[in-house]
Length: 117
Image (cartoon, rainbow, N blue to C red; front, side, top):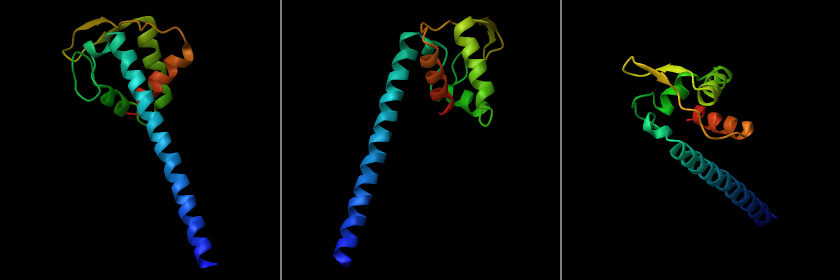
């Protein structure tokens, strides 16, 4: 009887481990896809994941909106879809580039990914 319990526990742990690794793999794939989109749209010209360039890093943006994700999502969507003037790290201003994605859900997923960094 004890061996059966141990086998069930091991089976359950293995199943959960596989599920978590698939989820992590999917997140990695999603991150790679979003990085590809950012690269295609020249976003890395001004931004980087974890260092400041002309614009703030994506991690800095995520930290700014930590706990205020709805506000961050709204602001980021406005910046990447309407091209308003934005203040750069050196204090100058320029129009933000409009990203070449028309699918609103895809845009929201991209923004949410950035805010999750």
